[in-house]
Length: 214
Image (cartoon, rainbow, N blue to C red):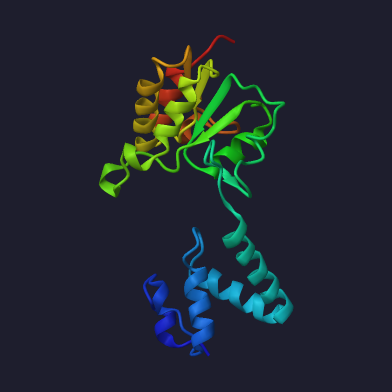
């Protein structure tokens, strides 16, 4: 039975407890995943236990494979099983186009759109001095080296539209401008299906500032 202190833990993952140390440790670990709270972690662990030993062993093997096989691409810093990722080894892509993103998950989002056929560079984060993330902590040196080869004619900056993302975009643009013919930024503004009355002022401002011919 779940103890009462686990039900009133005020969001502290360490307060999760069912009185079984192995289950408690598993729930604490699951609760560390983004978007996973105490109740979700508890459901995940109990699901695994209901499925039996085979399901747990499958998960263990998958996690071990992640640890053993997955690293970062030596060219773009995307996730890779080997020296280079599946995008950098694709010779059919347009080498003149280079898209800068914050994380590998952002790269996948652009890929799902199905419109971009160039290459990528993953920064590994965004500028956040208060959080200890300065230019030295980002993959900017390798980006500069790639641009100095002269193969890139357009650099597309696709950092997120946050305060830190905008600061990162300006820093990258300033660095890249002398090295590439064209530096562009992803447009943003009104989302499809959105209504004006529900937009915040910043989003509406960007939509107006970035308007185009119809």
